[in-house]
Each structure stands twice: as structure tokens, then as C-alpha cells.
Length: 282
Image (cartoon, rainbow, N blue to C red; front, side, top):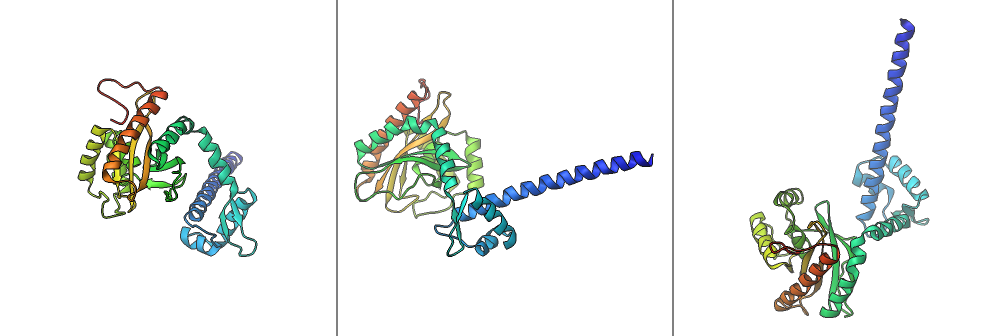
């Protein structure tokens, strides 16, 4: 009996050790991801102490995790300052992920066409975790251009791309996004009232394109339209953006019609077939 009980206790102890090991492994992964997020939030290099303070983890732990990630290329260390920045391995992974997004290759000719037609910068974005993510762009040939970059995440309520996408999502999804992300103000023109935004989205749905009239960044106007896949689900949006010096309110309406047409044709190329009651961007 005593031997059997000891075997049970030993087995229980082993299971407890395994559970602790799994918990520690999960914590290590979480710390590594927190460190990457901290490094990504900074333009330049960051020291161990600063990262430690930001994520609330002891310096020695942060230092060990950084050393491991450096050995794998996920972070890079400046030999002179001892500070860290994101590594090139992340660039490689990001490029692999972008290549996997078939929408990007399908949309590229439409972006180029929009730039030729308008002379302004064209963007492609998708919706991820309640925010808009820029996945491709074609720059204007003009000297004064947008400061946007691939990989940039933006709030949906204040961008033409985001409003175009929100207008095609179910009401409960929109409610959840607004509840979780809020409606922070970026400029005097930003829509920060939920009811006003919902009414605005109804107009976007009716006309088939959204306009950002200096709502995300002062001095910039943008028009965007949603892109649908073969099932009729919104999978992204196209946009054209330009400085208010070149893009008047009347111009942006004209651009909106062009973007809406491009989004409809892109949706059709992805297998979407509009019905009499439903069209891309509506």
C-alpha cells in the first residue's frame, strides 16, 4: 500500500513539475513578445533598463530574453551603446507573411492604375484586431507625398480605409470594435461620437466609398472603398490619399468614385459577383 501511494505521489509530483514547466514556458514567450512590442514602439535603440521599466520585468530577465532573441536574429544589439532594436529576422518573417496575402498581388495593378489616374498615393489595407493595417502602397510621383508606411496600424474610425471596412461589417462587430478601441480624437475633424459615426457609416454604405477629410491627420484628405472576396465578405480596402493643397473637397469626391470603381473591379477579380441588392462597397 505504501509503495503504491508513493508511486501516486511521485506521479503527481511529476505532473506538477510539467505544469510549472509549461507555465514558465508560456511566461517566457509572453515576455519575449512584450519586449518586441516595446522595441517596436521606439524609433531608435532602447536600453535594457528602459525595456525593463516599460514591461515591468526585472532587468536580468529582460537581458536574458534579449540575448536569446539576438542569437536568433529577432533583435539586434549595438556593440558600442549596448542598446537594442528590432532585428532583420522580423523583416524576413514580415515579407513571408506579405507574400502569403494573395490580395496584395491581386490589388497591385489597381493601386498603380489609381496613382496614374489621380497623381496621388494609393494604399491597400486589411483589418486586423480592430485596426487598419497598411499592407501595400504605391507612392505619388510628386515631391510632396504621404508619410504612410507598410505595416502601419491605424484606428478605423478616423481613416477612410477603416470607415470603408467598418461600413461592410456586421453591426455587432462594429459595436465591439468601437467598444474595445474607443474613438480617440486625432484632429478637430475626427468623429468621436458613436452615434454620429454609425450615421456616417450608413452614408458610406450608400455611396460606396468613405472620405477622411483631415480626420486622422491635418492637411491630408483620403477616399477609400471596401474590397470583397468571393463570399461577399469585406477583406480589405483601397484608398487614394493626398495633401489638401492638391486635393480639394470636390477632388476627393471624384477620387472616391474612382476608388469605388477600382474596388468593385478588384472584388470581381477575386470572385465576387454583385447582386441587384448588394455591390462591392455597399
